[in-house]
Image (cartoon, rainbow, N blue to C red):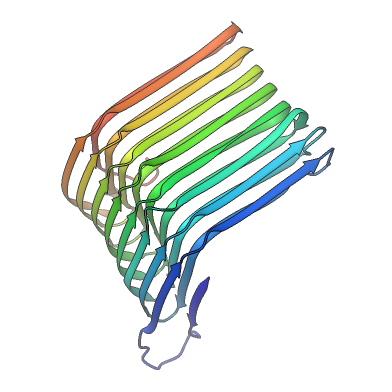
Length: 402
């Protein structure tokens, strides 16, 4: 990991020049992290973090400016695996996180400006795989969280009363898998088991009157991007199982005068989200599967949003599978959503907001959603939704919080 930080004390009068950061990283060997925990019984809970990252770079400024040129190439595999075996109690609250990333880059500006170019390349040969499992067929837990995340290329931009002018270039040919689940006899609280898989991901968050212009180019030519999560409980008060898979994703949310996003996305991978859960007795059983080839969100709780969006999805197709099975309980939900190209933009009407949008979407692949709910005994309510869309676009102006 390479980090660059520039901090300027408040009240200085000298003119500040942009701090230059040049970063070049090439990873040729596999990166792997593995944890196995055998538990008989604990009182408070279990906390595990397993992380494998090929290249990581971070730069931040406070009260000054920064110029960044970063080049990252991942030519190997990144694999993270966590296994928890429990025969007794997992305690009041447990959290198990497993994360695998090929290339990761982030920039931060507080009361300053960040400019530059972030380039991330993941070659064909490797895979990015995260696996997180809880095996407790005779065990019990209070609250249980299992989060499994795999991303080939990840870039983040964070602003606090800052500004940004950044270009992000991402190209991935690496297969991505986030696989996991939990088997527990009794959960007295909430079990939240989730999996997130993405080929290319860009996230921008601006707060406290920030402004940003970003241009993103994302190309995903891998064979597979898959998030798969499986859970089984004897008795669970609240059981939530979710899987989210994305070929390319851009999420930009700002609070300030301007958010300007130019996004170009191309995906040819087979994108699959599969979430399956079961509980013999349950208070609430929820299963969510969301698969999307290309996704863009551009939202500003300020004055203006400018969006130029191009999305092309082809190749393997997009599929979401959600399934919940229970015998006796209260409320059961199964939701499967599959979208080839998805874009949403919004601005704030209370701020006299405006939008300028140019959107072009093309899909040349199959899109399928399958939701199944099975109750072998009795339940208070059963809800099931399956949604498959080729191209989806939403643009609106609304008040904050609406």
